[in-house]
Image (tube, rainbow over all chains, first blue to last red; front, side):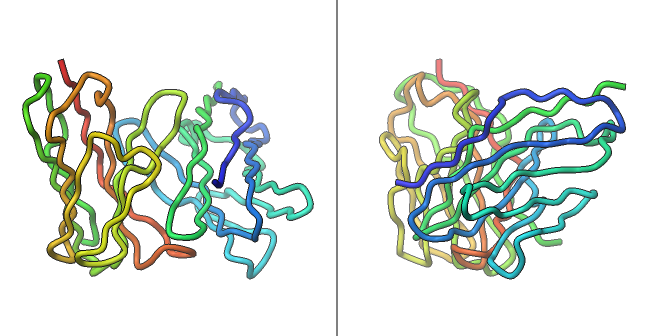
Length: 111
Length: 113
């Protein structure tokens, strides 16, 4: 079975500081990898996805993620946090016929 | 507007009373799926459908049923709800599984008392 591990269920950063949300996956073959964001009382929205075209993936709202096969990681970063980035972030893997999500990281941005 | 529509958004019901949560998408997507979201557990896939009349179990299918009679609709049925099915449910659709982006509904918050 596939698994997705997100280290840190809660992350707090100051406005303007670097955002780093960690994701590791287990897969015997390179999977498709995604980051989704969930704002309060809403469904999930795609931030970015890795499909093997490039290891550094740029997404919406200034977010990017780097696929590192040797570390089986797909960490999400943003150089400068904004108050509007406060949300829950989910890393996900697609392999076989299913999607597998991590347990989520709640990001708080401190003014 | 491309969207996935779930109804109802909120539902409180009693143990054992059958209920259906509807899901409809207007993007002609092949793949549809249901998830439940619980604190500390993230999203877990309940059932998925690769196409009309093709459904399969996800990771937590016990106590749920689905059907896919039309491409656009994928209802979730709880024949005899129990309190441990109290959760936030999401329907999602995508062109296919794999690299395709999943589009999510707004969610249905279900409470079973």
